[in-house]
Amino acid sequence: MLTTAPVLPAIAQSPRHVDAAEFPTQAATVQAFVPKGWQVEASVNGDLNDDRKPDTVLKLIETGAENADHARALLVLQQQKGQWRRIGVAPHLLLCSNCGGVLGSPDGANIQIEIKNGVLLVHQFRGSREATETLHRFWLDKASNRMLLIGRDVNEYDRITGDATVESSNFLTGQKITEHYTAQKLVSRQRSTIPRTQPTIESVNIEAL
Image (cartoon, rainbow, N blue to C red; front, side):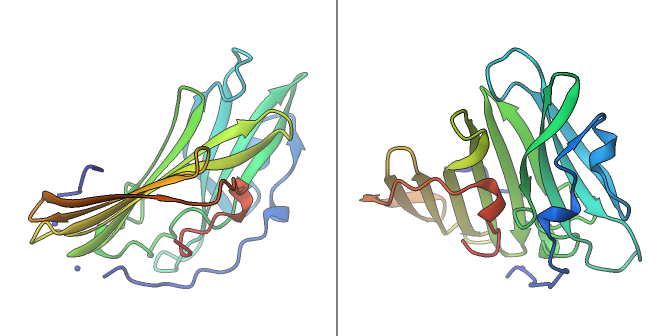
């Protein structure tokens, strides 16, 4: 079961539509991928393609008015022949600055990214008493050189009662496990078959779970 956050439904916001074309596809430096009106909120380094060279993932946020709903975007960059190349951009994967409800954080503390064993992990919290925790897993498909979704865990839970439904989907094996908890105790566990599709990181939308 996913780890639950310490302690009301998620607050829906409508940040502007982000177009992937806003971000360069190739540049000499990592900073050159950050267009005007955006800033780096966090970054991680790790090897995504087994070449023993660090790749870079940028978590970007819009700048502007303090109380506005600032959109976020995730860029995956790979160094090739002295240049940096964008191999993935996620314009709709990350919650906006005011989209997380009580569990949200304007500084992005409710969104964590890491690269572990060649897999990009994106972990997000939102909601209040009724909360949602999501974990997306992506890896680099070497044939297409694109970032693909290979797994997703969704934990919807009541922070007071401990009741929860946890769905863990593996798009490589085509298997999904659904668990139901009452007062943090497992009461049922089901396995089902799902399509073995692996969407690109560009198409993944946090609001379309």
